[in-house]
Length: 481
Image (cartoon, rainbow, N blue to C red; front, side, top):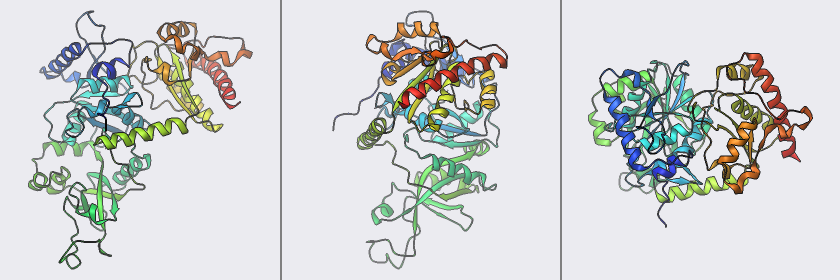
């Protein structure tokens, strides 16, 4: 099998922007960010991440992401590291032109009403996450477990102790949404549990005896009694002489490794000393059980596909996305404005609603020609109007258009003439036919520009939204012909 394709720092990071910073520059910026995080009294840098800067122009800079909005009560936290022994540089491995970590972020985005945070000790991963429009937190390198890493994030972002945090591993892009909901519901449904996780029945002897398949047993309340790499429970009579098959009446369950915590649990976990059994079994969840905390265990509502741990796993996941790309999506639309916080997120939200109502399978995103609002939520006026109009911009995070977008999307729709001119300059010549004004699809209204409502009252947003609706309706009707 050929070696897995890895997106280099310049490919994985600079392919998200017209700029191509060198690796040496990335290294300098990494040291700069960490030096600032380490300074005494710099608590305000709890969300410090590096920002792309032009090669050879000025010194490396860092930016603090603003957290003026109230934290949502569910966070999907994605821990990601580059130091995987079986598959080095795993988060940046290429899957249909995008790094693996970008696909995991896509998976998290599909979960309703959750904020997304990527926790990493590597600048390259942080920059990819930021360009995907989600918060990236640079953590210390010396955390012994993923839970310790998330505890640092909980403190840095000052999450309340009641905040629910789902730990979605950075190598699981195919995690079913039903499983994310199930683990959250399990924690919400058990006020006495400090954490929750999922399990599934083991139906073959090889899996029962495999130390890489962690087993779990639970009590009558559905709380974990113990986790082990050994087969538990051990059917003494049936396996007295040999272990050839699973006996009836002695069901075993495999722990699936998807966790939901309360933020307070993460803080307490990091403050606890490692437990002897945790060290022996190399299972961090045993630290909670050892110190008397309860873990709710529920059966998974559907099978969880394996994560990406080996080259064979990578090939399987690539095949999945290639098949999905070819068979499921009929169209790919990218809505554009300047900062990607007002018009284009509203257009994308309405287009998703409209396409779904008409049974169209469309992949829809939005972006801006400028990077000034990268990582921010939709503007307050856009959020207010979205709530009135019944469209969803809650998951939106602004991002700048990427060179690869011109290849990925078959329609790139500008809101005004300035957008159109900027896009025409950035677009490779072979893809210029994809770039056009949204209102080209509504010639009956006699307008070509959707005015920018940024800084205006709600009525200004409403006027722009009416034009967006006309353009999107025309686009959908064209797609249905």
